[in-house]
Image (tube, rainbow, N blue to C red; front, side, top):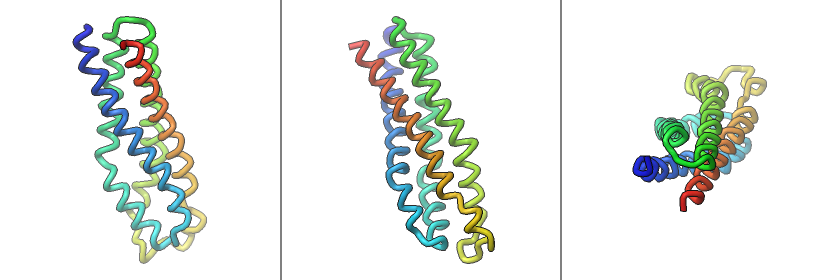
Length: 155
């Protein structure tokens, strides 16, 4: 089992670091969305989302699968608890993505920036998207911290 842990934990750290980094970038850049005029916001959002997919789902899922395997295969309660916590946090980040951010992304993808709905100002999803993005970003960063803690336990 030790050999499996030596392979899975670095993979979890890599995938989790990429996921946390990608979401951290979007958390830091998201306030820019609120400063853009509506006509510019929609194409900018669309452009960024297409750059992050499928990279983010693949990173989150890879890390989650590694953490689940580590929770089962690792020796030691501390490593199992930490990788289990990381898996739960990643599942939360993915749930927020799928139930909150992705539906907004899909709706925005259907819009023509030159012909937005007349009630777009009332429907404007920027604040909701930013709020949920912070939640999923926080979960991904916390999962990375849990995996780093698991690695330090093994040193």
